[in-house]
Amino acid sequence: MRMTSSSGLVAAGHTGSKMATHMSKCRTWSRVQRFGIAAYRKYSSGGRYPNISLSEPLPGIPKPVFASGDGLEKYETKITTLENGLKVASQNKFGQFCTVGILVNSGSRHEAKYPSGIAHFIEKLAFSSTAQYGSKDEILLTLEKHGGICDCQTSRDTTMYAVSAEVKGLDTVVSLLSDAVLQPRLLDDEIEMTRMAVRFELEDLNMRPDPEPLLTEMIHAAAYRGNTVGLPRFCPVDNVEKIDKAMLHNYLRNYYCPERMVLAGVGIEHEQLVECARKHLLVGEPVWGTTAAANVDLSVAQYTGGIVKMEKDMSDVSLGPTPIPELTHIMIGLESCSFLEDDFIPFAVLNMMMGGGGSFSAGGPGKGMFTRLYLNVLNRHHWMYNATAYHHSYEDSGLLCIHASADPRQVREMVEIITREFIQMAGSAGEMELERAKTQLKSMLMMNLESRPVIFEDVGRQVLSTGKRKLPHELCDLISNVTAGDIKRVTTKMLRSKPAVAALGDLTELPSYEHIQAALSSKDGRLPRMYRLFR
Image 1: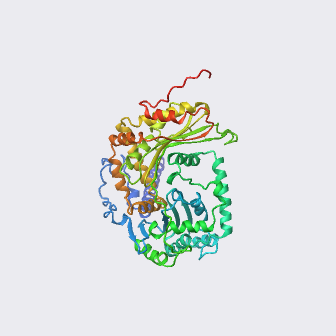
Image 2 (image 1 turned 45 degrees about the vertical axis):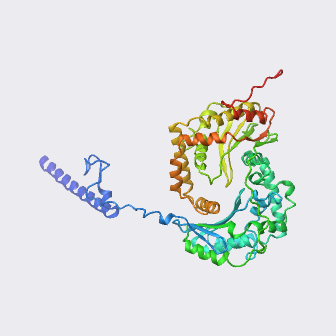
Image 3 (image 1 turned 45 degrees about the horizontal axis):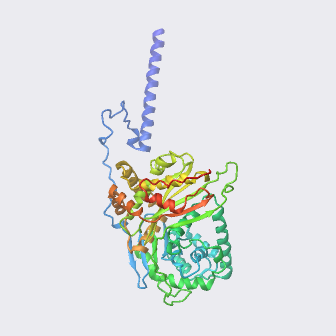
């Protein structure tokens, strides 16, 4: 009986085992059917392919076919000049949306013969009522049908009207851009609203905790005193009431000519954009008439150097549970070069090598923690809140500057630290330091150019200033070719120029301009010693 019982159990066990195996096979076959053979195979040490290296292809699996670039034809920027002189530039890019806009060679630097602030007014009045659209709301509703948005930005040398929308709405977008740029109504109530917006922006500029925009204004005013890029980018308070429709039309008549414009597009076919340009930008005349331009300012930027100071109580700039301590902000700059010169690339590498940032910036890969202003300044002087390098470049000049912030009592020491950094730029750059800066610059360039609006601005600005466009791989080659000798050469040349200084806050301890100039002319960048009878 015991034997029978046991053999029955064995038989039952065998039956259960067979059923389990059958069920497992069924599950496996179901997985193979659902996910394919690759999901079933096991590649671990106990699986089917125990001795194959991960660097070798697995047997029995089809060879992968990778996409290959057939030359750079599809990615070249195509440029066509229309009969009236307007340039049409496009860059194809995969996707159902496109960015299209008109860039005009017009900005605050062209206001020498006008009250400063016209470009600021034009930026605020953009995409208001036109001959075709009764109000800004109508423009926005039209764009919404194509999932679009619009924007206008002015800088010291360029005004840019841009729209991002579905490719299917290209004709509507170009028609709208043509109307916004060439047929604005500039109604009295729109101009009055713009005056209010400008006043608010000027108040905000003086109240915001970040003094960067204000310091940038001041350093340009110091470096190019009273000319071109040194003219105010924001409308001065005294000029807000002076600017009216007649003055705006007079300015637009001189600067909004087809030969000073580029219609740029990213994400569309070039022929399609040219066809739309011919349809909307060759016919009709602007609202200000077609009189030939008579007052165009062709001045070349004259670097003067100098100092602009603004004594200001910064103690209540950022009130709150954790207020920012009272700081004095200093920006020191020297003349670099225009973006049309060959030295522009070495200066861009130098700017990246200096780097910098705020003392509260969280560290991590790509944050520039190994740049000179971090290693030599922020890491060694805990009392400095900020040390950042900037490079502003225009078609006829440029400015490389360092912005620093610290407690008002340590301004003199802070200025000396910055002047020493300028002098040390002329020393030999380490191989690793230079390679890191070049790699970081290339990385930043390529990352930025993944964004469609950035490609649009790059295409438009390059074609507007040079008539052609350098592609990213060409720029990367130029960056790779920069040597330590190039950095030394451009720095030595830069140090021969007079400094431009902007100072904001409590300036009791600020050294004189002559002392800063003497420090930048010395071998070690130190300020002349001062001896006081009483401290």
